[in-house]
Amino acid sequence: MKEYVLVSQGIEIFRTKDKNEAERIQRENNEEWNKYVQKCLDNGDTPADNEVFLYEE
Image (cartoon, rainbow, N blue to C red; front, side, top):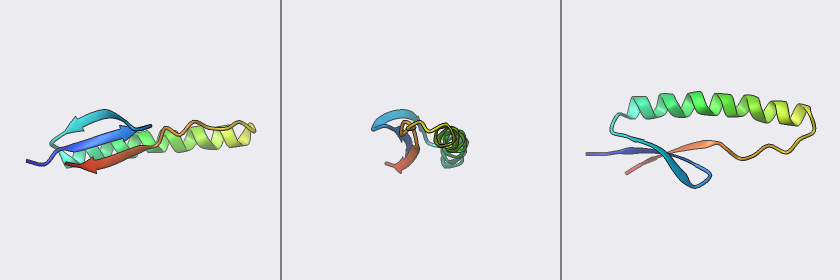
């Protein structure tokens, strides 16, 4: 059975067998990350790369 792994900064942060759950968590986290990046750019700061990537195993 396939597993779906969420990774941020090269570190596994979540694992599930439910693809919809993995995609939802990735989307929600990346929406927050995009807001954070925009806030950093607006303030002249350099954002950390906390984007979440989804891998299928």
